[in-house]
Image (cartoon, rainbow, N blue to C red; front, side, top):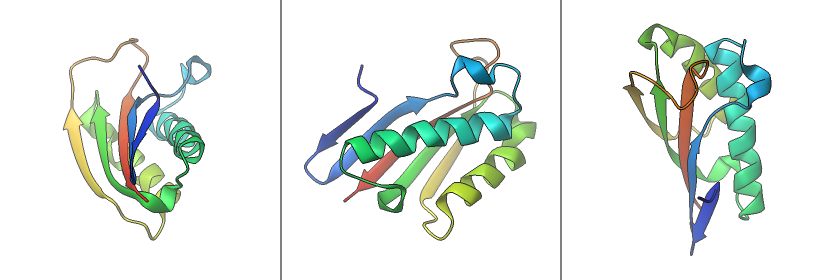
Length: 106
């Protein structure tokens, strides 16, 4: 799969989790790490966080929603993309708490 695909002015960033170095991190730290990967993927495709129009956040524990929302606000600041939050029963690896997709329009 591709981390990100650009089609014309649209960039689709695949679901992104924190790397294994964050195995013992909380949902906030994992979300920040995932968003750093997303930011790089956007840049590699010719975009930036300011171009993000939508995110989809998958959480194992709905109680972590406030932690992830804090990370989201800090990273996006005034951009404020549309966002959907979905609780899931599991992730690829048992320690993963959050996965984030992003869609950007250049």
